[in-house]
Image (cartoon, rainbow, N blue to C red; front, side, top):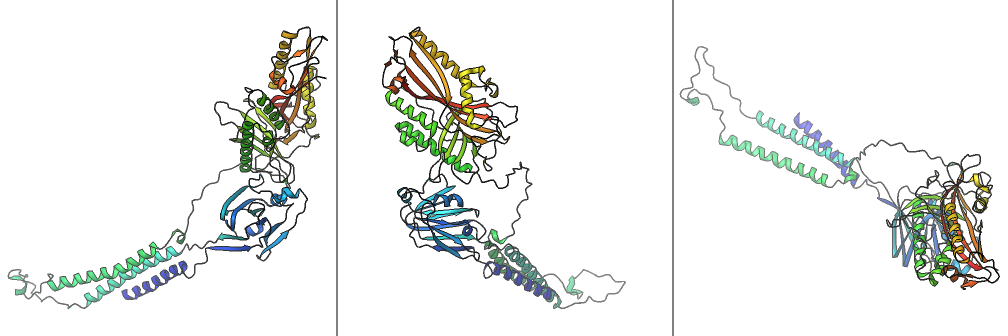
Length: 600
């Protein structure tokens, strides 16, 4: 019976081991799926649609081969198509049956043909990420269907024509390892049964000896040895010992191959040949974020915003060092650019003139992008300076006018240490832009600058005094201190012969407002402050002995009609919603000399 069970065990072991090996060899499927695209190579850009990238589940490995520089970037499909709207390009997609198709797309909008033909795709603010290599480019991506990949060389030469996308296929065989190991165990059991059967057969073939009958009254005498009494000794002889030694050796010779086979099979089993039992983690609750139905996605991601801020910081720093207003205009606009242009003029004329505060590159603490699918687009960021010697917190409003423009900072201010920002939406949710004439705020954004200028001019007599939180407004107190200082300086040298007057007005820049979670808004506005010093005596003149800045901007050192000096204030307010009992609150500002001219 032992032989029967041994044979059964051998058969089961052979089936199990054979099945395990077959899973790892003849039955194992391919490790990846791939799609190859061969374009005509005539257009400068190729757009690989997200439908192709997600036609097979899993991460996508993109491989592009070209003769020179190979560039690839990915982003939202709508943004990619908007960037390509003024140039012809090759579109690569997949139909409902999974067949790859290519088509030539013609321009749908008209821009400057020269700018479109030579436009480089490198470092566009629209891309979520980009890659650039020479000859062959390979990148592993995991993009959703609403994103696409742009492929180009330098924007002028034809895009690389050889493109392939591959996806990994799960070819793991989680039961191969258990089958092989189980088969090895059953094989060992069969060997044991087989050896036990052999032992049983050998024992059963030995001669059987019976003891001699003895009288009941006579004890067996042990004197004279066992042979004298006719008793055969059962002590082991040489033959018996040798026989058992041979049997033990045979057992070892039979067991060793089985053990070797099992070890060899185990050595060939990788991790994917075994079931993977992942630890079950208890999810922790997270706040629920409800995105309004139909809302557009945010204009940028956090990673994009970090790159944009870094590029703005780098460009402005280089412009500051070179006093290059043209370079500054690549990343600045509006009031932020105007103050830099004036500063460069003054620094060129006055060697010890201070540089404007640098725009920090990191760390970006707050990102609030506008939710929109059109242009222009707005982005608000708050960045803390990494310089421990001059710690500052900078708030910026940046705008991208068209898909082909970069983000430019139009408002730049400093937040006070005690500033409490209102509750803002998460970066992946974004905020809507509030129209300048919105009636849903206590004061429309287009009226905030004029109302604040009226407070500067009339103080508590202003009709807007109670609308603003003037008690905690550091800018108002700084403006009042400046008025007192300028008046005292003029009285020291021109008392009775000259006078100075002050006036504030709304600046020409368009306000920018982004909504907060409490239906209020952060509003950035521009305010002009002007002071006019003029003589009151026909024989008197206003000299600029102690004012090199005005002298540098006007080009004269005295005037019989006086001088008008204008300062530009970039001011950030929190404006509550209509019906709220809160007041408009100052968040941050930047005040700098803008211009000076001789009074008419």
